[in-house]
Image (cartoon, rainbow, N blue to C red; front, side):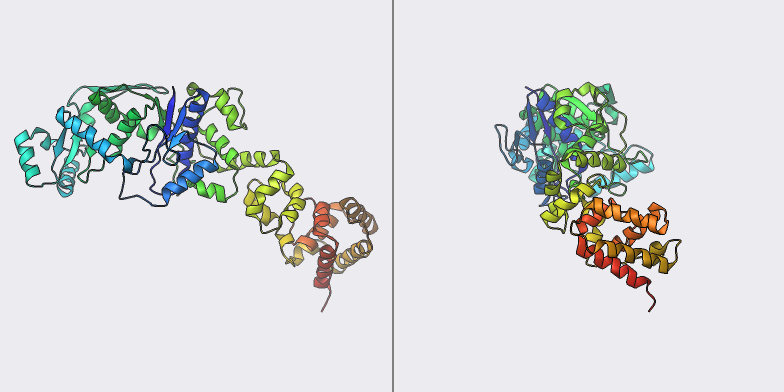
Length: 475
């Protein structure tokens, strides 16, 4: 059975890169009727943020990337939080020690720092010099007896190459002489990412390790660990990194990276997933907008592209707009409730005017700020345009007189009366419409004019037209 996993570290805001990797793991598991696992890798205690795990889970649930096993739902391979698995890692580290495939290192943090400084000055790659690797059993026992602090390091072969297959990139090799003797277990008994990840992937029977390409350089260390334990390798799939427009790795300095930001800015989860899918996968029919259920149906790992995708917010905005327009008015109104100051019944009235004009749910209220306000600030120069102020006042007054006795306040009637005034004053139609628009909304760009007047209502429209007239009247 195919078993995939996403293994976020709770060290900060839920990252869009986590969702990106989770999506591909999710799709493969669902396509192959396998299992998708969520594991919390919380071994980096210095960077641990207590609230981060809850935020990660909520964000992935918002995206509907549901998992079959995990820290919150349990499963047969738990626990799924690494901080609850310390005895397991200790056991496997001890096993490597007994087999002579790992060793204790007693160098202090300060000593290691000096070692690296010296190597850098000598223009050598900074790495552990393996001086504890040759300690005899007696020397190790004496230092432990003296209560000297130690870590456990992997004995990396001193020559040769470590070779592995990446499903997307083919055969990859690393010279062992360039690999550090990686720390597996720290002096406080906590494992490093490398040991914990490999042990967990094996024990949880993960068949495919699908992760970002930034982990490629760590993979030879993991391969050596698998071989040291005598375990079969999983299938490695390293996804292309999400990149800023300048081709650098995506970062919060150049792009929003928190999933909470996308949720709070009014992106639909379906649209964000669709966008993330396009960052590393091409639909076989060349589609750009498709539901994730269709991605699952069409998914195959060989359709993943390895070229670095550009994380383009404009493209995401376009996709999000497409999803917004595909919603029924009722569904869109329901989604807008948490983003708007307006009541549900008011949102329902305005949704038809907004649907084709917003790309994010947060754009709804700014589009109708003139509706939210009791009065609007009217830019006099935009109101008068190329006409005389007294002429504009007459135009507005004529419109008011024709509107005030209307019994049916409908956009068709409002439009018809305005066009009559165009003829009465021999004005270009766009000029008259702009005068009315600015007088009523204070803006030059709004949803369709007469639909806007209809939803604003007779009382508010007449009041604002009169206020515009007062602005033009001499004191």
